[in-house]
Image (cartoon, rainbow, N blue to C red):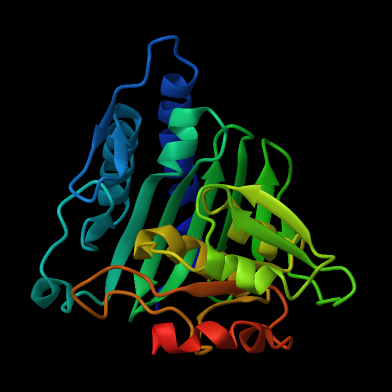
Length: 274
């Protein structure tokens, strides 16, 4: 049986190394050179260099486990179906935030076993903050060189609802949800930090009704689940990984209090995800 906790220090160190590379580009006076990938999403040299750092580090840590990363070709499903364990990596989650200088970007590394994330590390380079967890452990937040502190989701209070929303992805569908809570507080930001805010009890919900990929959610899901929350689709099922040819996620909710019926609030969208 694998003790995932033994892997965490090395994975955190790898994430920090990638973050250092990203910051060196972010703080450079040289303009960012942006290219568009086949899906029209942006990519920069910082994405690619961080990817190289992470791949090299993970290969040294566990050469027997494959690495699935946003910046590399995706193997065919027939090959991926043979993977019991694999690393799921977004070397720079929030590339648009990086380009637009909004500080909204992170390094995201997850270990997936049997279709569910069992280890997650999310590093916020601009703040030198890391969130991490693994199966069977609590979730933690470490700021700089300070001692890590355990984090947990909060109990839902219908009178004081705070929702994290994507800075870049708004829609009429989201407006249909928000209008059910005239007094709720909204926090807008990019990247997987929104899920981390749920994990540490700063917000109650992060709903995502647009396209994301599995590397966008894998690390966050482990951290949120071990903190007491859930990442579920609109039918209430936890997200699963590497089960189909496409790596696109369905619409999902990151919830802090699983006892609150958020799904009822999204019932008007249920048929879109059946």
